[in-house]
Image (tube, rainbow, N blue to C red; front, side, top):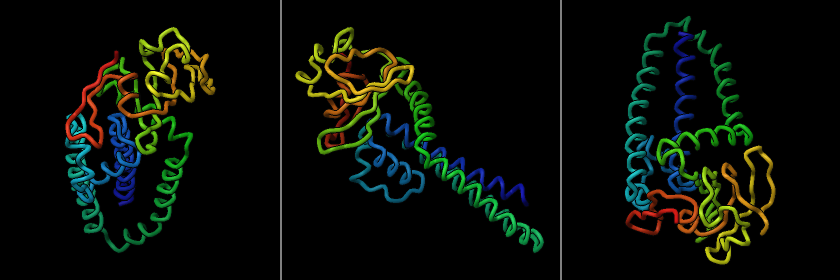
Length: 245
């Protein structure tokens, strides 16, 4: 019985981790954290997936594939959780029920500890970065620049970009010389080197492969400059294909 309860808690933790991973995968397709998490919760629970909100998913091929996989996982896992719960309580004797009540606080402590770990920004940054690299390679190939939207501000977005390769317009020149601000209205705000040294970007900054940067600008323009994948903007009914120049 104790083993069943421990397995039940481990299944819950696994379910939460999978939801976090799928959320990161959706973010890699150009969705913000908030929208991606809403879609994942909706897909896993089969609730709240409204027509207006789902348009950003169904009009993109790669998001449709992610959505199908998420729904299948959610259905299969829900059946597993329900069957495990029913079996535990149906086969439980009075003595086992008492043991479970004694074990329950310890299991709550384990879940609470896991929840606190998820809230840690340091651990979240490490976990998200690791999954982003894996997801980017699986979905877009190992040489694609990894673009993750952090926040939306009207028509502008802030994007976190890991540079596998420096775009041609930025290669070997300073930001001022590249014309990225004057020609594309993009502002590179922060740069972190492969060694982990972070600094505020300025006109004399030269980007290097494996740098991590924060960029402010329009979503489509950022993707035009930094990567080549299929995307669907929330305001567009059809997929858009963009390529590095």
